[in-house]
Image 1 (cartoon, helix red, strand yellow):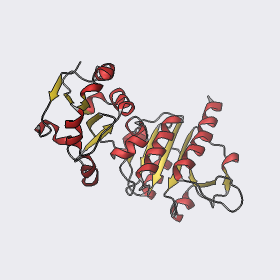
Image 2 (spheres, rainbow, N blue to C red; image 1 turned 90 degrees about the horizontal axis):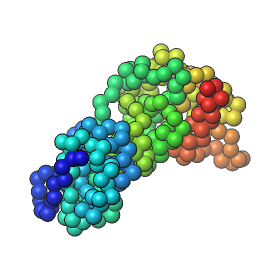
Image 3 (cartoon, helix red, strand yellow; image 1 turned 120 degrees about the vertical axis):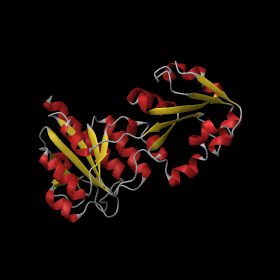
Image 4 (cartoon, rainbow, N blue to C red; image 1 turned 120 degrees about the horizontal axis):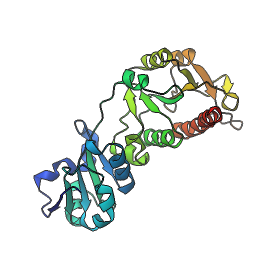
Length: 270
């Protein structure tokens, strides 16, 4: 069990990584991420305990978190503060009373792809700049058993605090890596034998009719512009049938529908 350090002074320098959390969200954390809430902390401890640099909790949450904290390496510092002191440190009333700071993983896209199994489901993201959508896509990726997420260079950070929270911690458990621009991402998938399907209202194949082999990647673009024409030209464009007069869905919703379909096909092959 890690040692618990009681904190009374909000100015304690050991709490510097937790200071002014919202402002730090905007300027970045130099290779660190912040996890918030019990469920997210549980997933972080289960997936990457050695990456957790420290934990800050409200004193009244300590007993209920004992089992979760026991999963951390014994040298990981756990700071416990009164609710008022914790609020003063983070800069707003933090009702969950649970935060952790961790080190972001540094994954190489080529190595991640090379390590995937023969039967693999990959999510590819191009231009996803909204953290709510990013978190929702990662949540769906985890729910439907995606093996990895590849991001192009224009996507936002999956380990932004809000994205982690919306993903319910899935951004910490589903392996991901940046793979350059959209063309480089698709080339990497092609080279590894993946069939890449690209979601677009202009797709020539209806999702309900889509059948894929054991290695498939589903590519999603930002709402509005969608995927680049050059990317659609290199992939199999797929559409989701909708009622007349409506041709688009929120990208996170789209990912859930598509991944459910692909996961069902995977289950039938098993």
